[in-house]
Structures are given as structure tokens and as C-alpha cells.
Image 1: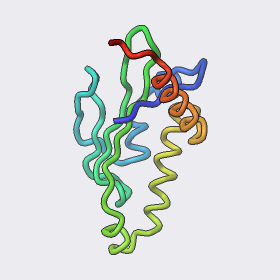
Image 2: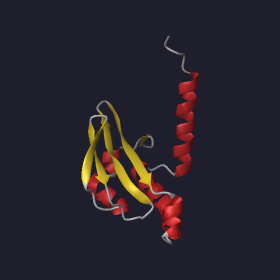
Image 3: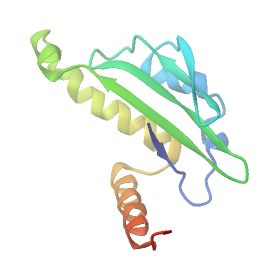
Image 4: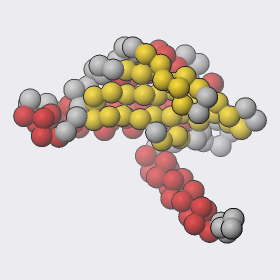
Length: 130
């Protein structure tokens, strides 16, 4: 499960007031919930895009800190998707994921990658608590 933070000054509840409708718009009908970090995330067991096997997404609440959006996508093997003639769906899958995250966080893929790099570098620079 990967969590994505919001752009400075932005709040997830302002950008996505109805998380279930938002998830359904991008991935398909929500069929279940799954607990993660004390929060119930939404599960799409039969996503609209044939590349996706299962999607788990939703708001992770942190009390005093800003909420983050969590997303985990199980994808089908590329060979299976291609064998079924769904090559275009693979291209669409990347766009769907990026559009979902950009609309939720107001950060494009490059900004999300840069932020991830910074957090990894910060972790590497932190002294070990031995």
C-alpha cells in the first residue's frame, strides 16, 4: 500500500468530498472495505480496466496531521492482458492511476516521484536509533 500526501495548502477532504464516488469513477463499483492503519479503505474486486485485478483505495486519517490518500492496485500479468487483445487497456491503466492521484493530491507524477525521493533521502540521512 502506498500513501500519497497532498500538495502544500491542500486538503484531501476539500478535493475529494465523496471518496466512494471518486473511486468508482476511476476504477469501478466498490464491492467491499478493507482495514488499513485503523481506516476502512474501499475495495474494487472487479475493476473496469482489465489490467487491474483488484484496487484498494481511500482516505487514511492521521488525526493531527493531514490525511493522505492510499492506493494499492493488483495488476494482471502483462502476457494475459496482451493475449486477450487488451493492449490499449494497458496504456489506459497508467493514465487512470495518474489521473486519479493527480486529481486527489493536486500533484502530477513528477511531483509525486520527487517527493518520494526526498522522503527516502530524509530517511537515509536520519541517525539510527541504536
